[in-house]
Length: 361
View 1 (cartoon, rainbow, N blue to C red):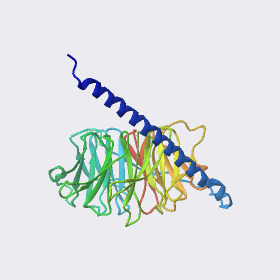
View 2: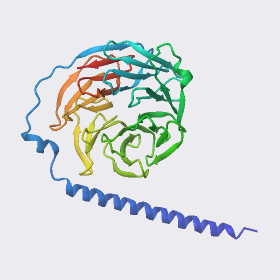
View 3: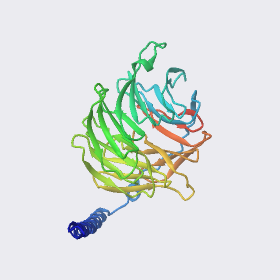
View 4: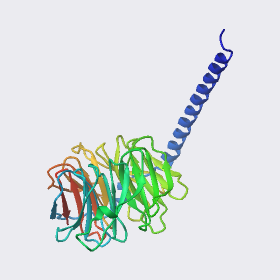
């Protein structure tokens, strides 16, 4: 005898599928409407507005320092607020703190795992955070005693269910923001390791994040393998803006110095600029001759230049307003994996799969 429940369950399933299909079409219609509204506001291109702006003259930037000491690919780096020290992490499992001026190594920590994909300097300069394939973010306090065993003071702060792709301290040493291959970002309390807020909205690995520059900034932007760049409210955990114009993974996002826009770099070989007030993409930085992905982007202090580290071993320098390339820098012998402009804007540092870091000015 057949259970009377079977036809009932089947009809329920059909109804469910119908509702789902209906909701899907509804969301697609709303998406199209949104795009139409956005297009109405799209009246002029950035480079057209900037036509009257004076072109940039020739400028010479070259490698001023080379930092050697990692035994494998350099994956991430960050500047200390003192404008002098740098922390870098590598596939060899090492995290090194350098004096960029003398090229001396001040501290070195060997992590329990290789592929240390993320590292960050604390605002006070008294600690560094790092993590990677161990799925967590660890904070190491730095002391003036060079012989001290840093590993003994290690504090595990964040736990994800997949690799850690990026981390950044907020405006204090007390909170840290992380992004992960598990598709989420999260805000943690450093002291207790408690999860303060989690951010769900990416449909795939989150690869990068950047905090809004203002002191009161309670927003951050993240980019990932779902080709989306999302802007989040840190207090509510809500995604407040989303941009989906890249054609491949977004490897890097960086706020414009004023906080009103951000740039992204992607495997689709383009950098793009998104204006948050206009709620749309306002510029694409690309050339037909550039076919390799962008691993990392950062702005000059004025915001006029955008530096991009590429997988073809080069650094391209773009005029943000005019959308043209103003310089191409050679030096690394493998792909450039990370790039950061120093806090005072006088130099920038790149890390590469050629095991070295370079300071350019």
